[in-house]
Image 1 (spheres, rainbow, N blue to C red):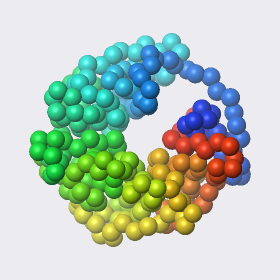
Image 2 (cartoon, rainbow, N blue to C red):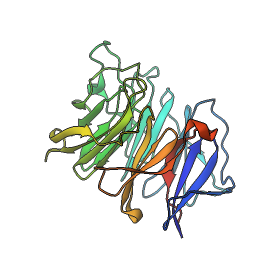
Image 3 (cartoon, helix red, strand yellow):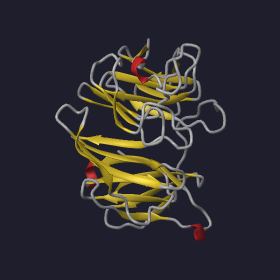
Image 4 (cartoon, rainbow, N blue to C red):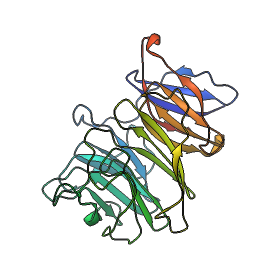
Amino acid sequence: MYELCLWLKCLEQIYVLPNEGSIPMEVRIAPILEISPSGPGHEISICFTAERGFIASGKSAWRFTGPLAPNTALERLSLPAGEVQQLSAFGDALYLLKTAGVDGHTLLRSMDQGESFEPIDEGLVSTSEANTRLVPTRVAQVGPVVFTNAGAGRNFLSCNDGTGQHWNVLSGERKSIISCYPAEFLVFGRDVLLGGECPTDDAFLLKGALDASMTGWAVPPAEVGPPDLGNRDVQFIAVAPDWGAVFAGVEGGLLRSTTAGRSWTWPVRFTQADGSYPYVKQYCRPK
């Protein structure tokens, strides 16, 4: 009956959207797994390869086999130093995004289920800070091409050399934008959606189309967000295939598009008058 569930930061509640309507219904949930707290502000990444599941938070990461349940055995991974920003899997490739530790690296890849990680960030050195690599918080892989938002702001870069030696700047700059949050992005086919807040209090939601090489634009990104997006920073952008829709979580609401991102409606929209203003951080599809 229900296809979509949302995690609303601040309210610490899960909401579901029924297929036949747009009014969220609150449900109660129970935790299925508890890991040691890694500090304030640290969020949890969960991803899966064909063989294993992985969880990361703070400076730690674990892997497991089988379904995630209260009795799931977690095996701690040996990670390079640095704060984990995200752990993502695409096929057999496991990507570790982190702050620069003593090794100086910020983007690494494992092809052996997390046994070892090799850096792929040689070309992510900042143009404004010598020998300093940009820190990514999101990564995606489409075929042989890897995409990231390293450096924050409206930065969106791609690499198709397999080694990370050369990164193409598709949006933004190859430097850290310390005054802005990192952008969110979604690559589906050759279409790209970019969202975030930069400059401060100026949220954006853009759509463009990549060329055949996936390293340049056939159609440059243009604004497609609703006029009342305001300063609602974009928290995630994701496709929900069963809905035939794209969703974008924002501060205080959820946007839905059934036109591949060309136009958007508000299934969930909070205002300051509601007394709470949760950030819609991510979604999942219950099985």
